[in-house]
Image 1: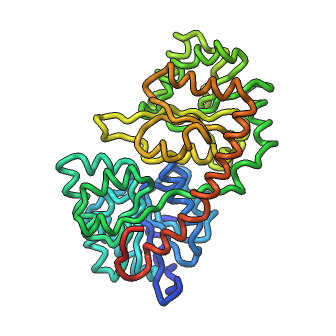
Image 2: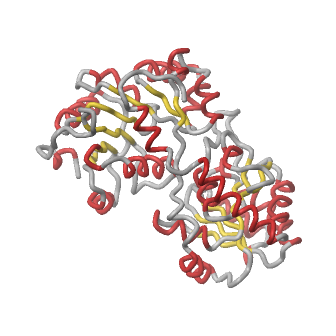
Image 3: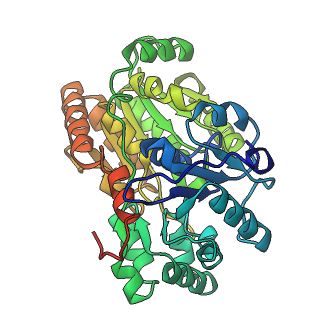
Length: 399
């Protein structure tokens, strides 16, 4: 619903312990697609619906999504929320009307700059989530001071990986760094790992039959390493001629990737497919044999992979994972146990890692089983509890 349509639909205070509702202020929300959007959406769906209100940007096709959830979703008129005075007024008004006394910023930068304005609306507890782009803020002089301001105003700054904690934490005031808490995304094991019929359907669409499939699913941006994956592909074919590479996603690099596929003369063994909906991803993973994404850090360390939810979803789907050595991505793979961590700029190393799994089905199966067990132990059923803990009263130390 839009901000104007929601007026007058406030509800009584809820949330246990006398606490009011939680207002999630975010640019990162469906139907827009991406790892952060998926993460924030799963957190909202994991909290008691009576406790949650979302304030987010206007997006095409949002009506169906907003009507499908059990909590109010308020859409601003802007397609991108910026910490302006107008937005501060709208968010304060929403907080008062829905009885919100706690706020979660879906991404700390830049919306966390609203924190001082929200204190005047009776907000007693604020949590700011961080992802990969805050590493850029932390390492750039002008934006670093803004990130410090955000951290000083909110009660908790979260991090998705140890890499992000180190890089972001070193830019924060000492007391704010001490209050950081880990809040990594959860993976729903009931969704991933059991979609065999859907996997067969996707194999039919891709016309791959029973051939081994290497999957790369993500936005088509430079950091993800699709170009190096394509450069590595002829070497993979030399060891496994029947293999097919399926790249699923959209983004600004699509045309470049299409040209590279033609130049390398690998058109017959590569499928460049458009992105798919949230509900389709379990079947996409189920159709694959190996997941590979040789991500790399760019812009002199300012553009890393914060963690990589797709690596965890693939592991939960019993796939061996080949991940690039960038930021927190190595934390999603137990190297040599659940997959391989490689130099994402080295096509030879990428090809060797993929080939070593493709040509040894028993090893691939063992890695996939160990990967699912590892995700179950470390990335299942923790995120919502961690957020609820961060939203409790009183400033607590780092997790």
